[in-house]
Image 1: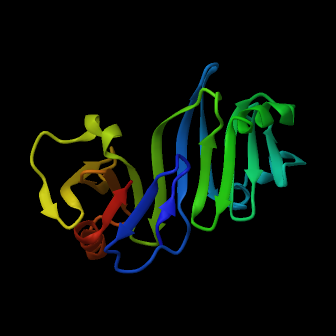
Image 2: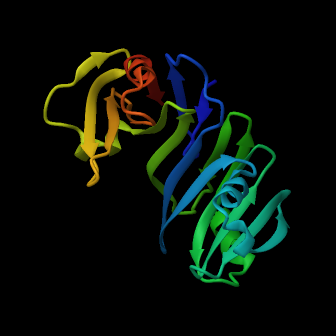
Length: 225
């Protein structure tokens, strides 16, 4: 199913040997007159599940409020003196990080008030309100093929510094380059960069010698419009 990204574009992924088992998460930089901040989107409840999995949830001070029919949740982390603030809708959530603790919900409400937040099964979209002075940049969409690889998709226009100087292999999804790197202990990390007219996709292999990884790199096609 095509996925809506938070800046209003549509991401279509085809050629997969099997469908993704989880939804897409996105990262987006928001630029306003007072500076810039990063927002993340994902399935509703995902941030809490990750925090519990990592064992960090128990140290949070959790606060909650209602705002325009959605839940606002605050995770205060005294260990790093920072707060994650979440907007949670029926399908997806949006969150950002704010330095300090004891941050009033009004700070987050002011950020959210610059947008019309539209939550639907195919994605969460932020539409800037007239006069809000908002610009978006640095979109990244992330998912995982369990046991095979992670998938990170960004607009082609934002990937120019990453493009190799040599020609890549022509595959269904565009031009493909394989990248092998070794850690200090000799462990091999294998990734692939796949570029076409609209996207630059990075695939990170779970196991470098897994033939399924090569098959995905040759078949996956990511489009963003």
